[in-house]
Length: 96
Image 1 (tube, one colour):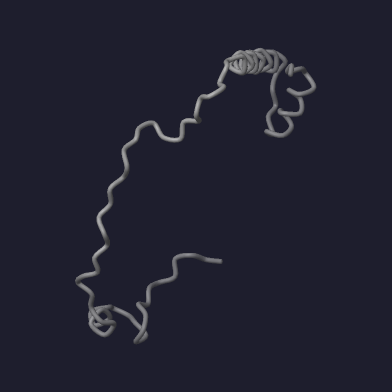
Image 2 (tube, rainbow, N blue to C red; image 1 turned 30 degrees about the horizontal axis):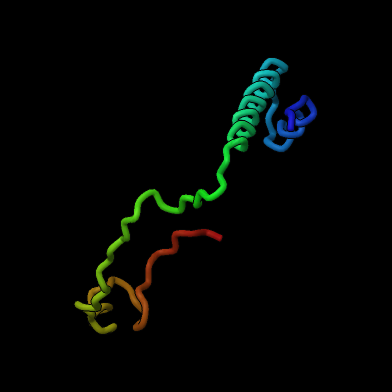
């Protein structure tokens, strides 16, 4: 695949950019360089190479969740500045 002026124009339109002629030429050169680098990578023989999913073999060790320090609803709402008996009442912060 080769990057040409038509593709640069299309990318310019999709990205809502306005490029000068010099910027378009520079971008075309950069993108062509990137594509040639990727094509060079495709020449590598990867037969029998497993895909890398993780960099190391470590496993994340997490502790079990333990429920403790619960209070009932009445005690939770006891010191609330405003509530309706079941829920905390707070000022509205989002205007829709």
